Amino acid sequence: MKIKILVLTACVVMLQACNDLLDEKNKSVPIPAFLSTPAGFEDAVKGTYSALRSFYGTERGMTLTVFGTDEFTMGSDGGFKFVNQYTSQFDARTSILSELFVDFYRGINTANSVIDRAEQVAGLDPARRKIRVAEAKFLRAQYYFILVQLFGPVELKLQETTAVSTASERTPLPEIYDAIVADLESAVTDLPATTTEPGRATITAAQHLLARVHLTRATMDATITPANEYQKAADLANAVITNPLYTLLPDYGKVFEQGTGEVNSEVIWSVQYTSDPLLNSSGNMAHVLFLMEYDAQPGMMRDIANGRPYKRFKPTDYTLNLWDRNADSRYTKNFKQVFLCNKPGTYTIPVAPNPAAADPKAVVNKSVTLNVGDTAIWLPGRELTFEQQNARNYQVITPKEYTPKLYPTLTKFLDPLRPDVTTLEGSRDYLAFRLSETYLIRAEALLFLNQQAEAANMLNTVRRRAAFAGKESDMEITDADVTLNFILDERARELLGEQLRWFDLVRTKTLVNRVKLYNTDGKDNIKDYHILRPIPQDQIDRTKNTDGSTFGQNTGYQ
Image (tube, rainbow, N blue to C red; front, side, top):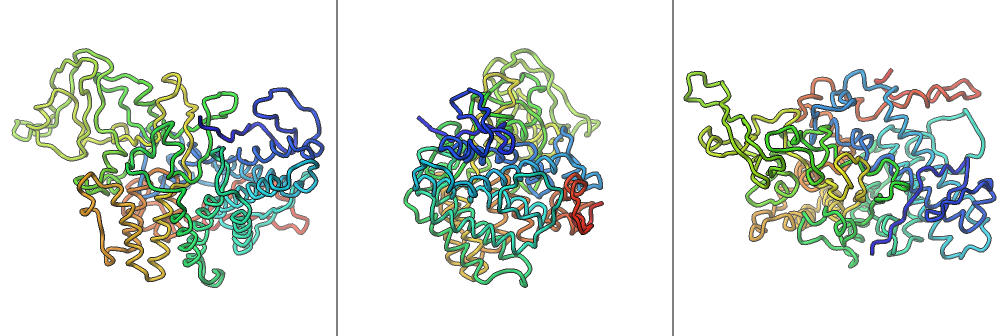
């Protein structure tokens, strides 16, 4: 049985003590007194994890990391299209920015409370105390790392806030990164190698995150970047890769199977969700965000297996052409190509225009009768002739027929264990750190260390796993193939939609160029300053420093 670390997102450290997750009795003890008990301390540690659910697997987090990149552009629905379009509407008043900012600082303050008060907890086993403090440091580092990548310099707070204050100022970026690295180095020392509660931080999770941090800091201004950042990233990634507890699964598709796929040898760290509505908050919503409008097509109605289509994110042409589909299984295992009829009847379906007809642009329609289980929709992923399409008694959607409503559905986040077709609160865990990404982190670091041969070895390990049986050699690359663009393409092939792309493009200073090349909806408006998001307006408005200084907005935003 899988044991999880679960958190109550309603637990607010400054107002009221957390309840034990299995004990619904209200606690009215003031938080300082409650935190001084082992039970209160444990609840506070669990509460430190809760802000992760503001980002991972949410429309908020996906909009800020998937949208506006080369991987995905706009589906037909959703209220944040301007994030992808980079229009002036994307400004400091954008709600998802302030929501994330507030939630992450709540998580940071909870972590600070755990760290500051740990020594005051009487009766707590010293070994457990050390581990829990290390968890809080890992989480504090994670929150700050996401914040500085999105917003640039923010305020660094390393002590618990116990009173209302309107003073706030932006801490220099090197100081924030130093604090992140210090927290993670401490976590690597003090965290356990394993855990019986998936979702809790381990040494390996801290090593993986620290490797990401060093890889990112390596690309910063040379005047503020410490030496040997690429080497540190490569070494930390190697420590994870050589850990015998972690191995790539033989089948890429198995990684994302709900249930068994959430806890396996490839998952280094995941954000926990649950089917218990009392503990799941808004749940993991990734399952609705990448789906086409299959449920309005002939022979189809909405069902649990195919999901509830929100039509938020549509893959770009760049994304759909990434894979060698003769050798690489990841296109097939990432995208749904066939929908089986679940609404039987006789329907009129469109067929591609007949170039030999009097009006070669006119769409030909035909009548078909579909029974339950028949193919209703096929997305072959390539163009077909009129004769090839017309020979099929079901709807065929080829690339030239993709629209903001009809496009390949990304399947890795589907949640078929939802209780009904309307449920949004997904229960599957969000796989935040995967071993295949560790290989790609090491490959990128090695590239900049001029060790292309070993970088190719890292890439080939990931690529061979992705191959169709018997096609492993076709997937292998040579040293000469290892370039930054190739690594970015490989990260897209392997990690598509996993809330990393915007960070990848900013880190490698390729965001603007790649959006201009591949994102037709964002290419005309993106500017150099879009490598940072706007500081939330309410953060600026509520800052009242005694010297009259303000928090300050990022360049380019009003």
